[in-house]
Image (cartoon, rainbow, N blue to C red; front, side):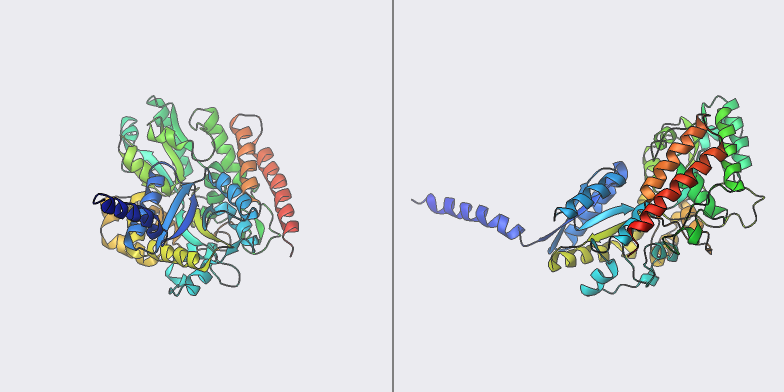
Length: 437
C-alpha cells in the first residue's frame, strides 16, 4: 500500500498537466513562409510564447500565398480556420471586400486596450492596408519591395567593377553582354516578373499601371500597361532573351535559386530574398536600387509594396482576439522589428524600427541593406502609391502567361501587353460587379 500513494500522486499530476496547459489561449496562424523565412516565423512565435504565459501562437505553413488564401476562405465558410492569415499584397483588395470575414486590426488592438497609432508605421506601408475611412485593416508583416541583386565575383571575372551595380537598363544590358562574353550562361534573370517588370517598373518610372490611382481610388480601375514605355521595356527584355543575356527561369520566386547557385549573375526580386542570400550564397554579392531608363522624366520615383500582411479572421472568441492583439503588439516593437529586418531583408514597418537599425550601424556594416527602405520612403505620387486591384491573383497569372509568350518568341511585346490589358480588364470588371454593394 505504501507504494500506491506516490503512484496515485504521479497519476494525478499527469491528469492535471493537460488542464494546466489548457489555461493558455491558443491562436492559430496560417502562413506561407518557407526555408529561412519559415524559420524566422517559427522563431517569432516561439519567442512570443516564451515572453508570456497567457497565449500560445501556433504557426502553420499552408502552402503558397494562393493556396493558403484559398484554404482559409474554404475553412471560414465551414466555420473554422485560423485566427491570423498571412495574405500577400495582391490579395488585399479581395480581403478588403470580404467585410464579414475579417476584423480590422485597428479594432482588435483598440478593443484589447493597446495603443495603436497608424502614423508610427512607414506611410507607404500603412497607407496600402488602410481603408478609405482611415481605418487600418491588416497588420503589416513581411512588407518588401523589389531590389537588384548581383554577383560581385562574376562581375570581377567579367572585368566589371564589383562595387558598382548597373544603375540603368542600358547598363544592365551592357553588363549582361560582358558577363556572357566571360562565359556566364545566365547573365540576368528575374523573379516575380509581373511585380518587378510591370508593377514596380511602373511606379519606379512614375507611369500609370492602372487608372484610378492604380486601383486605390475605386473599383472601376482599368489596366494601363500597354503604354509606349511599357512596350519599349518588354521589347528590350525580349531582345536580351534572344541574345542569351536574359534567361527566363520561371514564375514566382523560382528563379531565385539560380542566383543562389551562382548560375545567374544578376536578378531583380524581393528585398525579402536577402536572408536566403546572406545565409546560402557562396560568393560576394551586392544589393542595389532597381535599374531605370535615364531618359524618362521623373525616374526613378519610388517602388511599391510587396510581401504580405496579417489579417484577423472573424468569428473567434474575445479571449482569442486578445491573444492576437498581444502578439501584434509584441512583433511591432522596434527591437523585434529591427531584428526581423536585419535577418530577412523585409522592411522595418515602423519609423522607430528603421531609426533603431540605422543607429546600430547595420546599414554601414552591410552596404545595400537600406536600399529597400530608401526606395519606399521617397515622396509618392498618385501613380506610385501602390497597386490595389480586385481579382489580382488572376491578373498576375495572366501577366505570367502573356510574358512567357514574349520570352519564347511567340508574341511581340505589344501583342502580349495588349492581351494583359484586355484580359486583366475583364477580371477587374468581374470584381467590380461582384462588389457593387
